[in-house]
Image 1 (cartoon, rainbow, N blue to C red):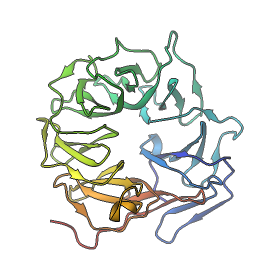
Image 2 (tube, rainbow, N blue to C red):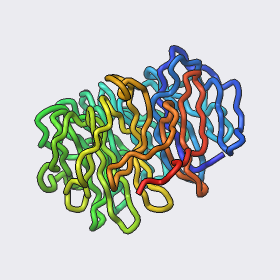
Image 3 (tube, one colour):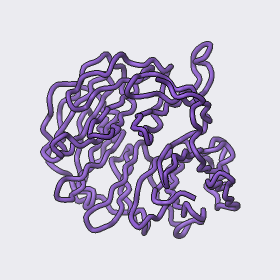
Image 4 (tube, rainbow, N blue to C red):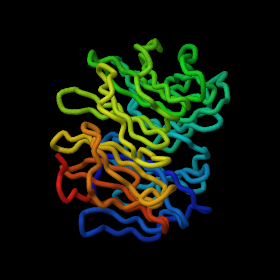
Length: 353
């Protein structure tokens, strides 16, 4: 079983159950049966690296969060003491004292938890309650970790990940609800936040100072739903953005679009990004199957972020995340029966040129 990552799973069954059957698979993966007795199974998965090579599965369903050891499938902590939070977007980061902090965005602001101990941190003094749609974590040169939040009120908020205290005034620039935020590191090593809103504006910010960087990124973009940055060999970075029907790409260094937007289908969701051993950046897109002809079929597609071309590969519709470990690329599936499955990512029949 691959180790050295955290898989954060968002679940939507009626009741979270106790893991009853754990199996190793012939391809070196893991099958945790009845991770929850679900009709739909896990719907979102985030792989996050933690210290000492330990792997934890943090599962959230309808406001209830539980943790599992990913190597054994055993529940961690007392199942009666679940985290209580309704999460829209999540992030995890290691703070200077060695703790790994899990941050969840929701209608009541942010909630913070210790991934290892399970401790829930109280709100910071004077914390205001407002809806946050997404969060991202950036580490400053001195080690301090800052969380950025995408505010429903059109503002971008910042907090200290270790203490939960607000940092400075909220950042103004969007004119409507901010729906997505991600993080990157500039060419000079300065951490950035990148935010996107309902009217398609994508803005860049200095994570430490909150200063706006440059103009909104160019392009005709519908409502921004997801943002992600991939780091390529040699230091180049590509920003990917999913809106209601397309995948947009920019070279992050100069902010210029990388070719035309790739039309993916209606209500595309950016599940994961990945860079393989050859340096090829790709995005995994889930499409719900709304529309006509091909668009009427629920599916997961893999797209190259450097060329904007779709890769011909058969991927399960239950794919939720992709990560590397031990020289292999793995995918995490959230099966309809409530199982979690970790197995090797299928290879394309022929690599596109």
